[in-house]
Image (tube, rainbow, N blue to C red; front, side):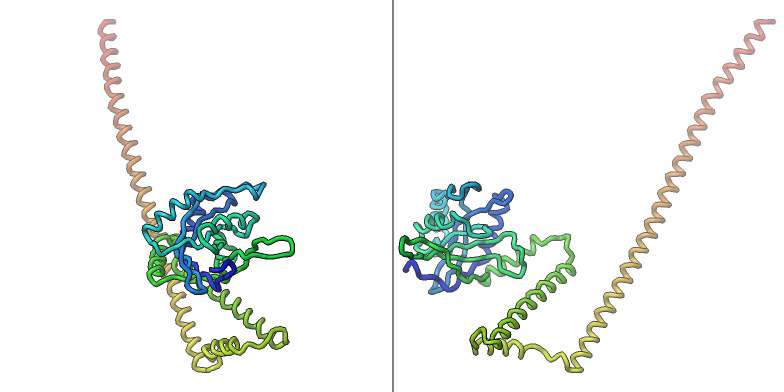
Length: 325
């Protein structure tokens, strides 16, 4: 494989993303990035990143030329992974970035000892844009000038892909770790909002492309135009009366269900409030009766203690009277 043989596409599988996020959450402090090795295979012009593992890594924030990559740990880990799955080879390394740094070319040269053309993948564990994929893939290619030859990173298109078994496993995993404080309805609404934002962004991209083609800034690509036409042909005609009427009926039915649900929720809340009030009144009454019984018992006890004292006083007075006679 020639050193300048750049792949056309890099496919990142879900296990790699989960492993990188777990690595970052366990190791990273403040804005420190983490680094690991990528495993996978290359088929033609496509690279599939199937697995990964963390590698101890340190770097000086003040001096980017000072860094440490534990390649001994990497070699031991790869030997163990190879025993489990010999088809997965070292194909590159990852960093949580979120951008390329000065020492990355040197780190890439270390990884080159284990694979002829390593893939450098930046995995953003805290993406700011939920509509974009959190991965950026690069390969280093030689840049030959008159004085010297140096390596520069070239961007490679990347996407998130998964096998059927991976999709099932990730779905069950995300279902187990789903935030229980977020209601199903709220989660559903947030997903709809994200989908609509993504649709709007892609519609804006298509509109911008068509405007540039119409203005002569971009050449006409018939394949793209055909694809856009197929997309628009799938869109329903919203001006049909039957469709508009059906949409209104469906909307009214949904609003009626929401209204009834709100009424039921209000009635249940009022019912619970009344029950709580009655329960509190019963508890207060029981407490008051208990206090009254305690006071009555105390009064009886005090009276019983006073009676022997008064009798003793009368006996003493009788003895004094007899003695005086």
